Image 1 (cartoon, rainbow, N blue to C red):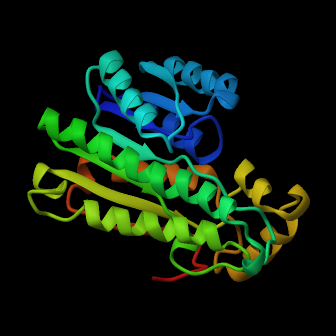
Image 2 (tube, one colour; image 1 turned 60 degrees about the horizontal axis):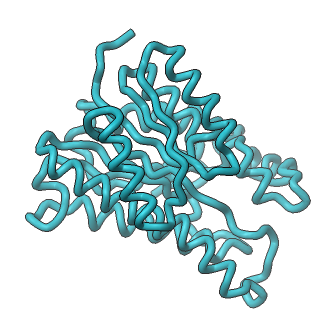
Length: 261
């Protein structure tokens, strides 16, 4: 087991990509705090138990990332429990309702998706940044964009808008000037996955059946497969490491070749 590399916080970590990231960072030598909604508390506790089983410290934090007071309290609690914060992975997110034509998307649906995916990422970046600047030892802030944040996707207007927003937040926060994070040796990057085999894929599929999406994406992809959560956690492992110190402001595509930047 590697030595202690610091403290990481992963939001939306009860399942899928977030769970894979949390477990990988624990394997890399980080103590890992995990977050999700109250409805996922039991699954989140299972992730905590797995991290502890890997010989690392962990803690569970129930919070809605779209609410500033809850994000600020979450970061405060992580620091109190673990003694600091070195890596923030703002992974929590939702998809839009599947197969809804643009002209029929309710404003409430747009606001729901934006509040979690865009506002939630902004709040995680903000409060992790405040803590990392205070500590004065640099840090890694990592967000969740998407192939849908690089290219508009049919019937997914709110989701696309939210993931394009994550790209903008990542690039703005990564700028090197006294008002942003670069001067403080804090890098800000994002991963932009294509189709990944997770529960959120079923949420995005019509009638909960992702088979047609998977078939189409496999045909489009040069690698002829869709991704798995560990494909993303491998990238985050690097972005969280010291070796990634010269990369910032980058929303990195990881989609099997379906979309080239």
